[in-house]
Length: 392
Image 1 (tube, rainbow, N blue to C red):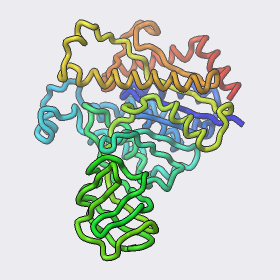
Image 2: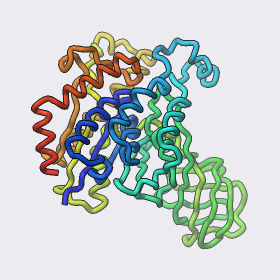
Image 3: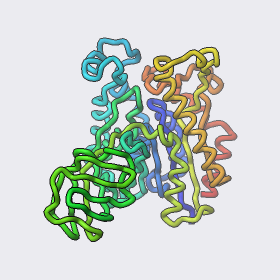
Image 4: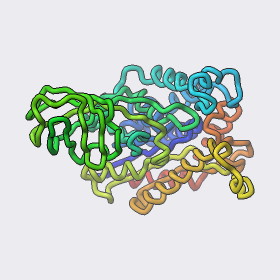
């Protein structure tokens, strides 16, 4: 029996391209996308699309969300604007381009009080990246045992869409739990699932929730990651041992999941395999937000330093991530994947398509929508889509 995956790339305002493609697909399958797909994965703007679809929104409604609300998320184009002064006063001259207030406002309005674990079908996978432990965060609607807990849907999207240089990192609480390996009068040795980064748990609270020493709470004053050795600020009344189960109240510093996987298709395959599905049963529809065509000539790149590379580098990283994961996915899925993606040039409509993630001008939005519509009506795309749907 086929296991159907929908994978949605990052790309800021260009998420409207994917939403328009999905509207065409929704008409073809003649049923809601959240009923057709078994797993929906999204990164960055793709996380917003994925969450909205999983919640039951129609694609045309998501198109309108981008069309009507994007200027709240990206309220200006230039970094040198008086509107940015509050950010500069707060963070200094290197402040992110935008506050996350608009992003949070739009997502809270769109998703309300819905939480991650409220999504029971289809399964939802959202990818972010933690700057503290320097590893991806995989938010999974079916894993209620994970340390992030039952996060509001709007908040996991903020975590996934906080692109460096554009938005500030998002602080999200988490719980780290496990079995102690050993205990000393002034310390505890955590298990191998704990962080290997020095000082990552400094000044956080650790509580023994079961086993020897249950009920004790201490503050970690120093953490040596290589040994999972946590020194506590006050000696234990009862020294924990191998029977002790601990819980640490910590935080994520979450940024855009595109840093890890701007194209989350391979991550979705990995989850499907972990869930017990056979690779030959997996079908993947992977949708991009437009392939950048802007050239960075060698003559420029050769001389660029920190200031010049700061913002273009994000696009380069995200592009590279998408291409690598597309390659990996195709090697695994072969003909069982359909990738929908077009170049952001004038070939489809003769009109300019901006590759900026924050170009919310009405002209660019309408041009992107028109290009997506033309792309989906191409005979070769229609044929590929029909073939995919017949085999899915």
